[in-house]
Image (cartoon, rainbow, N blue to C red; front, side, top):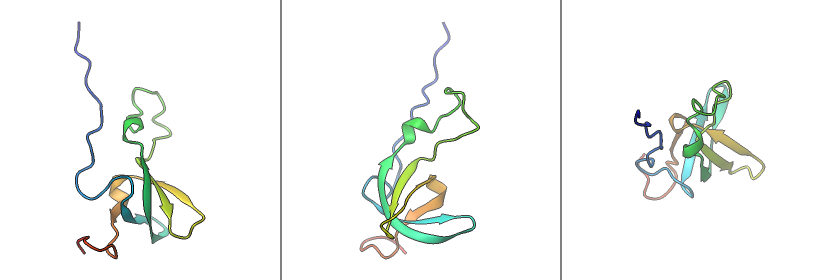
Length: 88
């Protein structure tokens, strides 16, 4: 019987995780700050679910404007440089 590959996501290295303050940079939208409220890493492997046409973004971020929740990938985020203890 063939071995089933483990597609489980590994924990994000560094300062990213639920509760972390981040700077969100996405194309055609000004950079904004917010707080990560959820990590959807276990849902990002869409290959097995058959919906590669609608990939899941890993992170849910509540923006500081108090009105919006955005979803972003790790490449779109950096630790908020205005947060004490963050590099930048």
